Length: 326
Ligand code: TYM
Image 1 (tube, protein in one colour):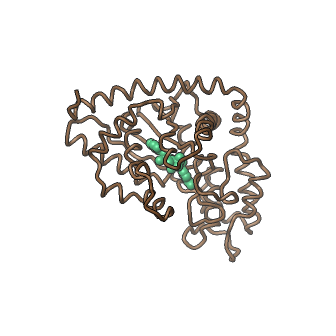
Image 2: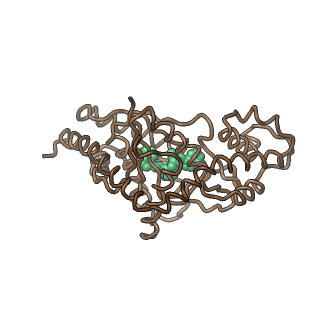
Image 3: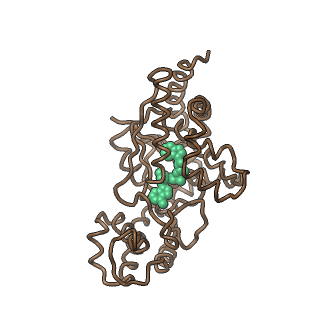
């Protein structure tokens, strides 16, 4: 049995990129693996959220994870800040990581460049080391993520190898597990950039909890191109290809094979809305039910936090001993 770990930030409404790129695989992985799923509230602090909002988003993230189909009897769902070994191991790994490799992280560079000042937080810079600690604490063999996390996973692998060589063989070197379809869902309005929780694009982002009329409206207004041919070609037809990718991921077909079934963008868009609405309906129904019993969601997290901590503590102690701490 493999150990699987992944994480999601409670930084905004979960969208279909999160669902198709990651959360759906998490649900599949809970059956055949020993799976740990972490709500990474410490990572969310890098965008300076309002404290009350962070608290409520953390609980809402848990509701969302249960609603998409995670079952606390088959996996461990926990909150990063409640397992202090994450920050403790981060320090050990920061003493192994280099400024150069962190400075090359594209997510850091993008965020720093968009803030246009030197007030970028240190947390944003060291973020990938915390992510490596999240993974390495649990001896994860496999990390199911979307395409945008590939570089962070490469860093986690490199830090594990370096630590093991410098001290002793403590960490498992994890593999990224990226889905073959919808690993990078694009914004419906700006199909050259990924759909994101943190960049505001109300019409370009389809939230997991968007109701059918919202989904129809957004898909209808999705940017395509001035051509009329329905063809899968991400380079020259990014908008249409993104819609085909979504339809393929929602229905289990390949975007190339679907393309020939549609004569117009209008037909394609109707099919995409319908498929997304059907895909999200059961998730939304479960979300509505779970939201009525926050007490039991909090109890699920408390149980998950304890289970996660038991694993994390063991790994941290071994790492701390290896580097020479008393
Ligand atoms: P986050 O919260 O941005 O996203 C959660 C997961 O959703 C995937 N994802 C996407 N997949 C396809 N298309 C998109 N447009 C899209 N947007 C997001 C992400 O790849 C991710 O798998 N740094 C991570 C959280 C993290 C983590 C970890 C992940 C912290 N520690 C340890 C794995 C292991 C992040 O910000 O994900």
